[in-house]
Length: 350
Image (cartoon, rainbow, N blue to C red; front, side, top):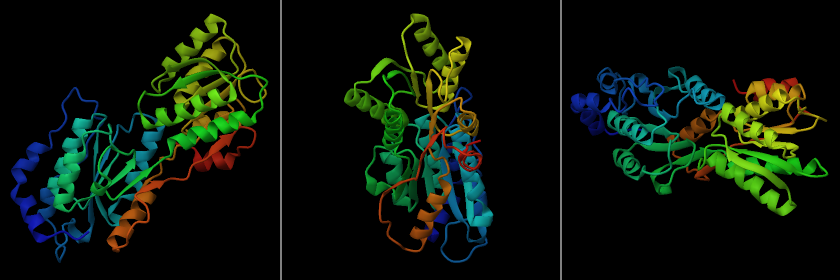
């Protein structure tokens, strides 16, 4: 997107204040890292012509705000995918900032806007609190694209949101479970971090199916995406002597923890075994568990979003109007009875 000359001059004049704005995080922060560059220096070295506010050589300046890349295999793959594609070779001057705290992400967004980025890409830590900074971006001519997560803000303040349909992920999984035609369904439901889009969508699908089909939820507790927490929950059910034959874990790590508890108790699991194991996110190691028949089902949550984002940017740069504000990525579920090594290699994360 072409920027006005005045935006460049304003960014250069605010050099000292921008340096101060960069210290948005503290030592006790959960921020993983920040590799944001000094945009003012980049602007000073800009040898491009015309009224573009992008970096030297006519590169589009992009500020990318993401969650901690060490949070999960999904997040690591998501970050790697963005870094692989938002490169100078592909026409971008990309700067990255990471945090699991909403206020730190917002501070990074404000700095990117002051730096004069053309596009601001955001995977928000929290859905609330973004209206003001998005309005600032719009006022400065910075276009905003959301990825991975939506936020509670006026849709007019951002160009597009590239997201997964978490409820559909859950519906696909519970339909697969229904199709297994078990004589009875006694389910341990391991929920993710409460209130997150993935937890809400995947839980809603299971809760509705259980009510409609008369399935028995033996226990429904949050494992907070954590394998150790999930292991403790399943171990407590085993100790209580309650009968169960399905574990519906809302991510792969919790499924792994559940399996650890089963193994400790010598309870078989997987294809044609005592307990059906279901996970989400399609980590490569998890899909290998399916391939080895130790698990039964894994639902995809697509971390490879940069191609979708770049397509949106190309359309905007060409003056095209987007057909839809929310762009739902294609995703699928995998069955241990049919999965192939080729699918493991193609869709496995990490």
